[in-house]
Length: 390
Image 1 (cartoon, rainbow, N blue to C red):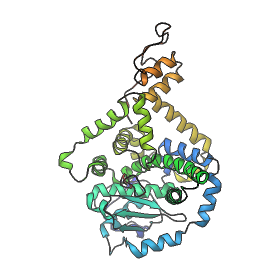
Image 2 (image 1 turned 90 degrees about the horizontal axis):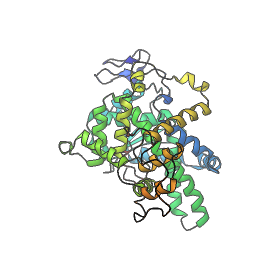
Image 3 (image 1 turned 135 degrees about the vertical axis):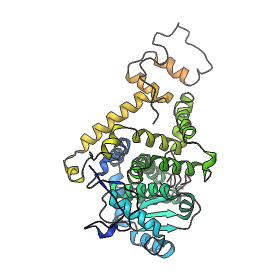
Image 4 (image 1 turned 120 degrees about the vertical axis):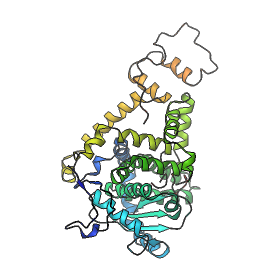
C-alpha cells in the first residue's frame, strides 16, 4: 500500500516539513510510466525518430543559455519559499513528497494576468506560475496544478518544453528564409504534438498529488471559462467534450486537426474528459492501492515494449472513438467496403450525389466501426496558456 502524508515532519525527509493536514496517499519510488499517457510515449518516440531532431537537440542543448534563464527568473520574479508565497511552497514540497521526487525544483511566481504555469530547464527543471493563475484557483485546484508541473519534472519533460519555446521564437525570426523555416517548423510541429500529449500525462500526475478529481475538474473549467463557477456545471462541461468528439462529419474532423496544430495544449474539455476517464479506470484504482511501476524497474523496460503498449492503446482508442474520421479509419482497418462512397458521405456527400453504377455494395454506415461509447491552456507561447500551463 502507498504511504499517507500527515501533519508532522517525516523522519529522514527534512525537506518535506509543513505538509498539509489532509492525509493523502504517497507513492514511494513511483516511475513516471505510472501516469504517462500512452500517446505521450508514442509521440516522443516519433519525435526522436524525426530526421534532424537529434542534431538539433544536441546543438541546442549546448547553446541554450540556461544560466541566463535562471538569472532572469531570479531577478524579475518572486521565488517561492517559506518567506514568499509560503502556501505554494508547502504545496510544492507536498507534491514532491507524494511523487517521491528527491530534489525539490525551484519555483517562481511571475507577473502575468494570463493563467499559466510551466516546467522548463535543460539541466534541472524550474517551475514557473503566473499571478493570473495564482489569483484564479483555490487551494485544492492549485495543488493539482503544482502536482501537474512536478509530474512534468519527474517525466523529464522540461528539456523538450524549453527547446520548443526556443524553436518557436526562432521560427518567427527566420520566417523569411523559406527552407530554414520549413525545417524548423517540422520539428516545432512534432514537438507540439508530443507536448499536447504530455499534458494529458501531467494532468494525471496532478490528480495523483491532489487526489481530488472535483478540484482538478474545477481548475480546468476555470481555465476555460474564468472564475465563474456558479455559472458552470461539470456534467455540462464534459458533455461539450463528447459533442466535440462525436459531432459533425469528416470536414469537422479535418477542422479539428487544423485548429489544434498551432497549440501546445489540448483543448480544455478534452483534457477534462480524458482525466475523468482515467480516474474511473482500474489502472487508477490499482495505483491508489499501491500497485504501480517503480523507478528501479525502468531499466528493464524496453522502448519497443513501451511502443507496443502505446500502439495497442491507440488502436483501442480509434475503435472506440466517436470522431467521424476515426470511425472511417476503424472501418478501413476492419475491411469495410465501398471506401469511396463512405468518404463522400463523410464529407456531406459532395452535393449528395450517388455513384451512377448502382447501390453501395458495402455495409451500411457504422458497420464494423466498433463500439462508440467512450470519449476520451493556456500557454504564453501563442495558444492562450497550462491550459494554464497546467
